[in-house]
Structure formats: C-alpha cells, structure tokens
Amino acid sequence: MASKWDKIPSIPDLEVDWEYKPETSLGNRNSKRLAQKDLRNLFDVEYTPVKMITATAEMSGRLVDISQKGFAVLLEKGLQVGETGKVGFHLGKETIVSKAIAKNSVKLPTHHRVGMAFVGLSGELENYIAELVTAKSFRSV
Image 1 (cartoon, helix red, strand yellow):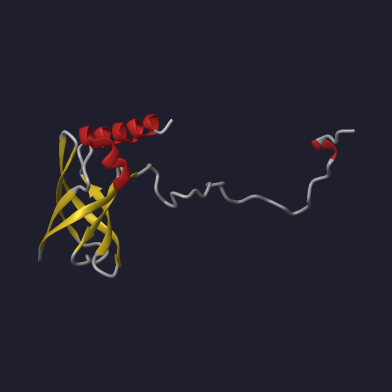
Image 2 (cartoon, helix red, strand yellow):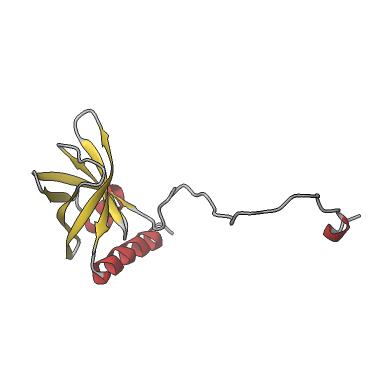
C-alpha cells in the first residue's frame, strides 16, 4: 500500500529561508576544466609552456589545467592572491594572451601551483576553450 504525500502532516514552525545551491566536485567553479592530460590527447603535446609577466617579475611555467574562466599554472615563484599580470601560451591553433589575477597559490616541493582567473579574455577565445572541453567530452564517450 503506497502512502500519499498529502496525508503526511506538515512540521510546525519549519520554514525554508534559503535557496538550494548544489555542491559539486567543481566547488565554486562554474565551468569544466581540461587537465594537461586532456590537452596532451587533443594536441599531442607533452606539456603547454606558459609565459607570465607581473609588475615585478617575468616567469615561465607549465599549464596544469584550463577552463573558460581561468587556469592553473606551475611557476618557479608563487604569486600573492590578488596579484595581477599578463599571461600567454599556445593552445592548439590559438594563442591565448590575457590579463589574469591570482586566486590561489600553493607551494609544492619544486614549484608553486597558482590558480588564475582570466580578466577580459575575448569571447572568441572563451568559446574556443569551451569547444575544446566539448571535444574532450566527445572523445571520452
């Protein structure tokens, strides 16, 4: 015998005063990322070199992952959260050049892993990165 929901009494004084926001493995991210292994499969490259210029330094590094909104990079020196700079790298047929802001920085044994958000990345390049994510999704089906 199946119960009907309307026969279950309500709980007095219980109100919902918040909106449900699902928590996902992406945390606060609202776009999927491509890891270096995904880029290796898409472009047949061992790694993606990155150039980073800030007000105080010029650095080289390696791309760790990328999304439409940002990327992570391994650098020899860390950046302070909120530090800004310009970044450039080749991603397949496109050259990505953008302003970026450091969102997090973690010291590893030999490098610093810095999470960056793009600032003012063109819509065309954002779409290109989105297309790469889609291409990766189709390749893994």
